[in-house]
Image 1 (cartoon, rainbow, N blue to C red):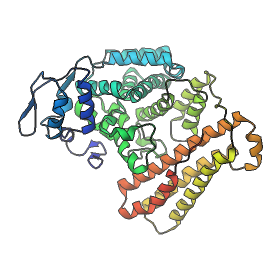
Image 2: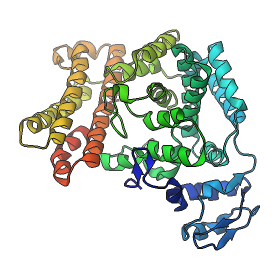
Image 3: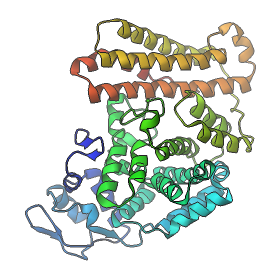
Image 4: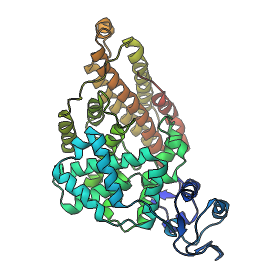
Length: 441
């Protein structure tokens, strides 16, 4: 799959890609058929003209093997209809319920203009294929579904803050709804929030924006601006994102805002909608730790709105400071040495480039760690007597640990996309050093 997804979606004919049934998508459809009527909206044939289902026939467990063994004449997504499936009106209703439960989302999307834009989405129709996937997501991956709703709410607030017109506002909110739809085609094991993925495993997850782009191109008539926003929601202004490491002006304005909304929603929707202590501070750190990742006006809107909630105090933490900070400092030191060696040795320009990028990112992280006194262990006894200060330090350390893993994944993806086997071997030590799991509690 990873080799067939191209810069703009699927290499060649997208319909041809979707005619080969994805087993994870099919498994979800079969599960859905046990609780809702999923019927053929047309006669379904394999590539040789053999009829597999007649129009109006209900999909059931018995069809699993038949579908997996055949290549279809038309993508299955185009041939199914789910009765009582999700509509944009029901999805907007879920958004409003979520805002009532979560004060952070209410603060970000609760302005009257934002609410008007969000409610206005309820009148739009949903294509059958998209309705099917959203219905599947709501039933069987509720946490990811709620994360999309959170992004919709945040995008409504960002659109109003940025002064977008009605059309751009609608497109931004719509892109938030569908930005992670490609995850329906990925092994669910890689999407388990409790699992730490190594870079080669994460590469599968990193394909989801391209799969979503291909899906939208094949099964909807959404404007190009929506598709671009979906494709770019994990890109970052400094070039550290994926899947194509775009930067600055290479990204669309809506894509930049979608990236902010996705990042914030992912943090807000952790747990059970709880307004956990330090959440607003955690969001602020995530958006500002590395300058240039996100558009400053959008960051300003988020941090200003959240400041009104008085939740910027990190949760108190007790324990031994050195045990928390030393593993990360050692990890950074090891990665820096490897990267420095690779920038000064006989390596390809690609390897030198990613090594320089790693050093630049480590420098930014180092500066933040110096600012909180992480390198000065002479005051450890004072810190350990101040659980509130320890809490802020640990919050930053947690974000740093995540950033190091993200850097490892970014380097791995860039070299595996554009480099040779020799390049991949040369960056393996750097990727391993940055990927070392460090747990900060």
